[in-house]
Amino acid sequence: MKLYYYRDPVGNFGDDLNPWIWTTLLPDFLDDDDTDLFLGIGTVINSAVPSAPRKLVFGAGLGYVGMPAIDARWHFRFVRGPLTAHLLGLESRLAITDPAVLVASLLATPEPEKRYPVSYMPHHVSTRMADWQRLCASAGVTYLDPAANVHETLLRIRQSRVVLCEAMHGAIVADALRVPWIPVNAYDHILEFKWRDWCQTVKLDYRPQHLPRVFDAERLHSLGERQRNRVKRLLRAAGIWSPNWRRPPPVRNLASAEGPAVEALADLARRAPPLLSETRVHSSNLIRVHEEIERLRRDFG
Image 1 (tube, rainbow, N blue to C red):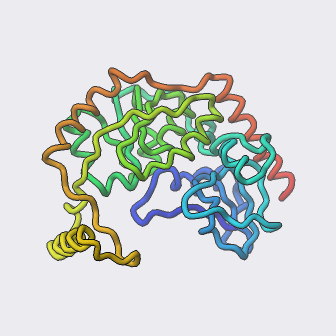
Image 2: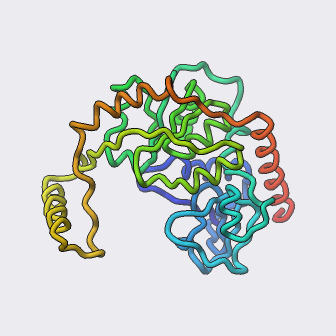
């Protein structure tokens, strides 16, 4: 059975937890045989999943692309949350939580010393919109790079007193490690559905704090690319456009948006109450996921 998850070319924290968690907890279970796929952490229940192989869903969520065609090749052990279960027509008991909660069982105690008053993990797509590392430095906030080494990021989350999270798995892992967190939204690409899906399993409301949108994506582009983007914007404004053309990035607004974004980051942890699921809810979810692991071992052992 082959592990199936979204693989960002640069790296993405939540998705990149998959190899570590599953090879640790299910050794010798996964291999490179793609006749069967294992869908664990991630928003990967969608029409992008290869149709031919059998799929074993072990905590994944629904979203992005389109609704998959569910047939006899899909086997659901549990899913991320009740919204996923409802849209797939599954029994509500299969909605447990995101399996990234398992980090709580895999990290050694005692807790490391708290070194960072406030940390921020943007969504991995947001890191291409602007230099959030520099904005965090200006705000006195520790930057958690969603593309960094998973184990380094886990340590930094544990060393933080509060984590601001635009990346949902930043929040999931912070909650699992009992670190208070604050949901944040700076851009339209944040998928509210998946946040609400997971938040319902930890009995919390998803009410994100909004940050100013900063657009400086073209800092990563060559002069030729910037010129092509300018022409595309002019053509689009004139009504000359093809759906097959790649859209240009938003117009750079760094000069006007940088100051408000830095101020909002610096102020956020002071004015927004952090969230943390109740211990009994967290413990119950973790126990239920471990029960599913034991059931899987028995069935395939």
